[in-house]
Image 1 (cartoon, one colour):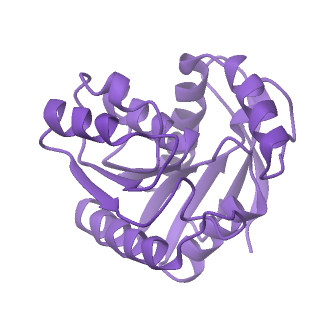
Image 2 (tube, rainbow, N blue to C red):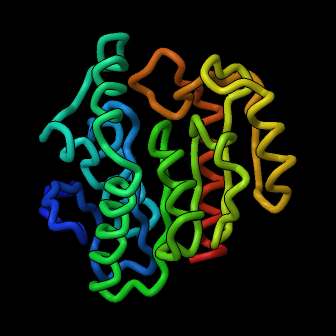
Length: 224
């Protein structure tokens, strides 16, 4: 099981983070939350990466910039509250928090750090790959909004995963990313919807989740 720690960003913002795994692990990842906060699901993802795959993982509590300890339910009210909180946080603030998380892993001796984001966190992972040079590899699962920023060139290898039945991310967005960034590896899971990797959501699709997980682990094993 992981533990809560406190980190400080470059702008002196103090925030909580969930840390899992040992500093002596061979690989390190920053895991970026969905629009619902540091939920049990996100913590379970971190624990799995640490326990089954030997990663040292840190997941920053991005909502701390707007409301501390915010963990929201997977329902319409949770989505709306999450969107309201997100709107109060600048992109620069988000990048400061994931950068501080990467630096915390660097201080433990990890020279290469990857970033893995889900939903909102997928967009943050894309921005971290294109707007910073802190990460050696980035993967995003059902990250909405990436198409609008796909003119930005990543500074590291990127792998993207989308659901073919995602009612939040149209196929036109996926095609736009393919056209603008042919170097980016993209996988689409035909029968999967938005949030297909979270077993606390009705859209959970075990087959798509397991395949995306396998591909993500192979991707990070190659680049970290």
